[in-house]
Length: 484
Image (cartoon, rainbow, N blue to C red; front, side, top):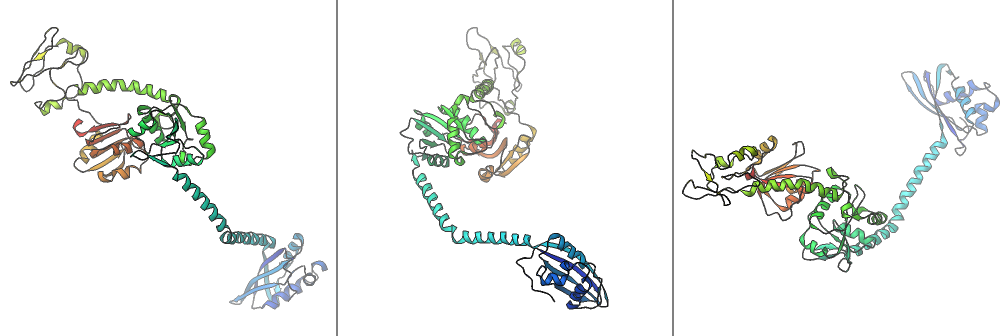
């Protein structure tokens, strides 16, 4: 059948398919190859001579017969050059008979055995590495892991707790006149790893009073994350704390994840608080000084409006239809033209009489004396007016829907519902949303709920009742049902 194959020198494999019209065996196929190619080419490329010299290997034939037709595959290993191998493959296709039967041989492919060997080498090397990792590396890796965990425990053990509220701080905080204010315990630990121990953590967006007492006699640098939550903390700090400098992590990063180089770079670039820049939201790119000026301009008319709204409180004798009067004023000139006349209520007429240099009084309607209180400027009213807040139609409908249902609904800036939940579950579910603008709660608006809503960008909260709020962010407005 042929010589033994020297697999060490094999470069290529010739794969050819054949089809014989008749039933034949393997020796018939191999004999046809020898017989019909004999003398066709030079002696150097004769199949018998090539096998004798070991330039091609043993001819392998895979064969099967069905319905009088024999088909199969011929495989010939070759250590010849590419050109000689191609000539040999073309020679096989010239064989057209096997014994008395017609035959057709067609080259399928010529494969490079060396590529297979390279793949085998790569796969074996990968397997060796995996075995090495399983047997050798775990020991060294476990040592490294133990050292890292031990170091982490040492750092964590040096974190101290201050006051009964247990503020997390570095061991050097109490003795240092210059301190760094960070957001959480993880930030304190990360700074300890790089040798910075004069730190204290806020632990939330609300700044506790006891924390303010701890830092009031120190030079404070606020080291904040590069996200929206940190912007909210910065807005809180400029209202309630005496912070001298502000350092920020790169945008999108948190202090607890910074490397040593990033930490030192951020602290090196700390700026006076008035020059600190907001990184996110509608205030992105403006400084604290610009923000305070903008807030001041917006706040002045709001304060006057709020004072006007609450200057006259309703007495128990005012009827419900009087309480529903809208807060729109008539032009000032019209009010000045009739300064001494009050308008009839419930079929009666009430008059007030001016006394030059003295307080004006209105005569009682039902046996009791009532007084009219002067408003700012020259406008005077002789009856109390309750100012109602008019909501957009979508919010009014939502308030009516949740009343007595103990539910909460959260809207985005386009009044699309982004969250609907029971009041009991709103604390947990509210933390899962990214951003919102308005929240309606058929329950009590507490300090905790306010703080969570603040971190989500909510600027308007409508609730059935409002608890005692000790720290109200400047950017959040709270309304109860009675004001609607």
